[in-house]
Image 1 (tube, rainbow, N blue to C red):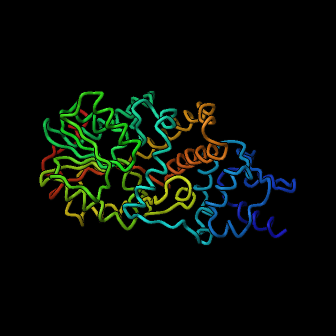
Image 2: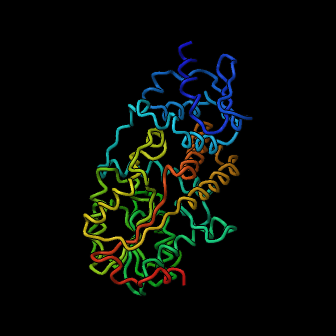
Image 3: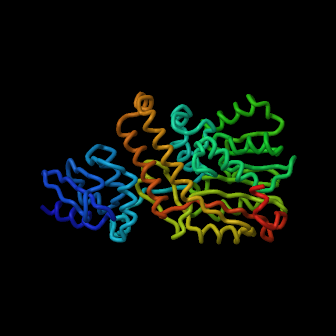
Length: 390
């Protein structure tokens, strides 16, 4: 009985849309006015003490295990929870526990490999052919994911106003599309670093296969261990979300250290306009060590590192659409994925993709590009943004 009272209080005002909740004893209730848009079924109660420790982890685990079933769009349900001011998402009493985090070089390498080394074959199934695992840039409504990813890569490089023969460092280079496009299409000499052995081997092979040994190199190393001369340009996409709150200062100072005095950097990553935040379930199961910094934090660290901002662009809606396509691709390849991964993993990954899309849709998180320079803002860049699009 106490379980039921607790659940009714927890869920009755947690969603901005009407939701039907089917309880473990056969009772059903509709919370909100109108026809239910999503249905939640509890096959058994999730222990109250687990929800009190961290509701995000407890309910996420229950969905992964099949103890909770959702009929309807997970994305719509999660967005409705973000849209309700009384949602359990905003109850600080339900966030008492967060997974322990360490961002030592050893821990960072483990964290990266636990996610990115699931296997290139796995990511090939639902990413586009460029193997780009970050926010795409949809210049036109009907752009394919592959086209939108190449739009993003070229959009980033063009923002640097690159001059042929100069050098570029890509921190967290992924599967190499950005750095190798900079080499092939813009004539830059490029270096990339990653902590993922799978990505390192993949990029190494691409460099050899495409005959770019004189223009490109990749290193398996931590950004804190760089031992290179300063670069004319630095890019870093989807990286600072992994360095940890306590290492953001070091991350931006490292960029300043390896950026030439006249250099330009484009830093692209998930940012919260409301301030930095952790998510217990994401930290536990998807991105160990993850922290989404606040816009104000990043700006402070950029300035404290002796750099200045020339341009900021938000890509929130682009990332929402990217995730929606990824989830559609993921579902279209369930037969192949289920040959290697169990049902729990599949439910976990589907929840991750849809919940992240919902978080962007609700404005809980954003994706922001920071165009920064050493010294005075945009010192050697054109005065208007026209050069990016011409």
